[in-house]
Length: 416
Image 1 (tube, rainbow, N blue to C red):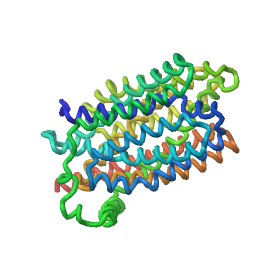
Image 2 (cartoon, helix red, strand yellow):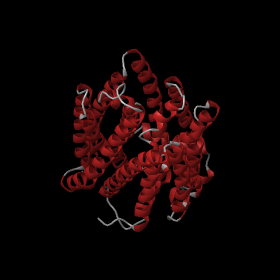
Image 3 (cartoon, rainbow, N blue to C red):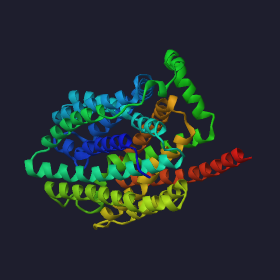
Image 4 (cartoon, rainbow, N blue to C red):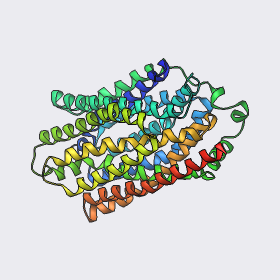
């Protein structure tokens, strides 16, 4: 399927957002720790971010439906740029705490807005049918993995060549300003297609209530909320604690120099980004032509759980890097494919608000997970946090099966 030019431009921009943000992805926590931020303060900053994004999530979603999702994405780039500039002031918490709040606002503005923008452009094009969302999301995943791979290598290269971390943060800040210009050149989704005049004149609370009622009164909506919640909970240790976990599993946590640790973390980051790109570029694209998307998602979940179990059992070798790489490839599928499947069940007029409400509820799962993970890591060990991630992945599997069963019933009902 040939993807529309405007959709493709937007997909490149979304992938670039992820890439620029992850230039510091392989060493962000390590940098702050090296600057004097303690582990306790690091956890505090993450909780500040999580609470702030919960506060901003739904209002930003409603804002996107009111003023246009394109504007939301552009505003988010401004705030991302400011965040990376403020990061260099570590370990000053009076700067880092507002920086985390700004970071949360940036995420809340683009959370759901980018997807709603993509959906709006697709719905306004000549392409019809539910599979188009899966195909476009697969292409987005492929682009994002490629951009992340380049970004990870670029970040390590900047740090090693400039002999300081700050240069990478300046680069990220400038990169997001460039993206403001890029997104301004992409066709937006007209306000009329996002909501009728009646919707725009109605109260924001009523708009949010209608979106919430739709979610909790449909089985698919409830499944999607729970799935997103468990996925976000599983991602907390994977996103925020993977660096000390990988160093510990490879035996390099206490037996390597600072530059060696950076190289190991950079290698791991580039490795899983590169393999994830190849996986989505070739394997998933081929499977999408042969099998149902939700069946592929189910298989990916099962394989993710198996690889995570192996990652927990193997230590003191380079094998954890290989297993972590494979895990990211498998787990990248359900993270986006459930959203693509959910697109079939929502209307464009309140799509951004619906997605923002789901994201808000998932963030609550994430905050609770962070509290539990912090307790597990301090009382048992970092491995316990990844055991929790494995449990969350396993809980998504029966929800996937229930979704498949409900979809079959809906199809039979429409055909009757």
